[in-house]
Image 1 (cartoon, rainbow, N blue to C red):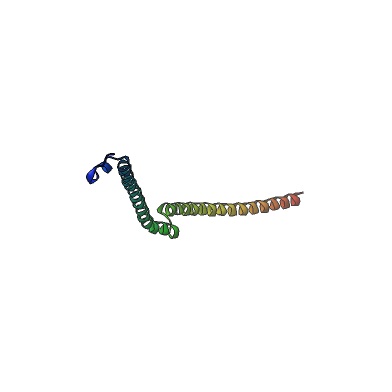
Image 2: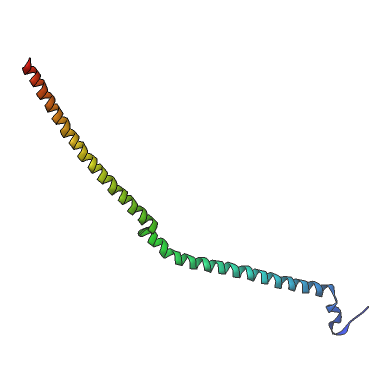
Length: 119
């Protein structure tokens, strides 16, 4: 039977090596977990900062609209004004046609009256 004084036998035992491996594995696990946790917290804080920055812009876009929508509305308004002017001009021309048709019908009546008097 062999006995070592001052614990020399424990430092060379399989139990000591196993415990050192467990401690090393635990330290590596804590480092990896800390890294993952830190990255997730950084991503969450960046997302929160982005959300705060864009919330004002989104609110303004909901209430006021975007520049593109304002330009599109202005273009549509110009087209509507042009179409309204063209419609008004066509209505005036149509009124003239009604007057001409009335004059033609009067002339036809006058011609028929003259032809009836001539016979």
